[in-house]
Length: 91
View 1: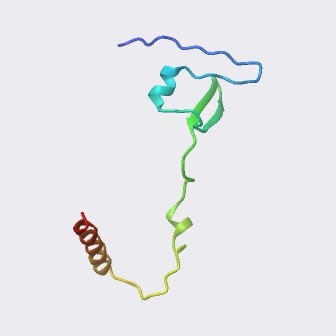
View 2: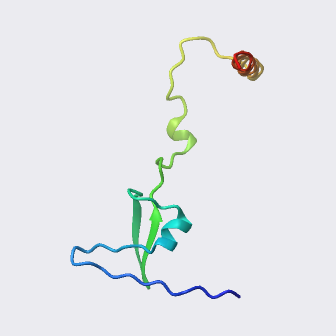
View 3: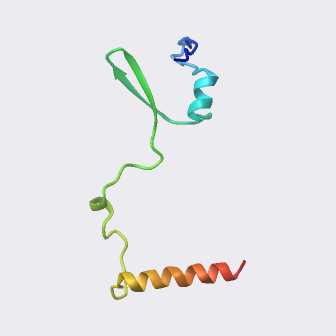
């Protein structure tokens, strides 16, 4: 088993903590990354804040109004294929 070096940091007088570069690079956390801080029994846990809020299908179902008649799956598939062909022809 490979041992990793123990990483440490210090809390500043402003309460700021600098995460070691090795950690930021491995997690792809760049300046401005928003983190969720959770208190845990042994300390704290930092997690990246999701870019989008978690939603369920029931939360968004029917949110886009449609002014026309309902389309079948076959009609929708045909429309998607036609648009893909149209875009590909422009290349």
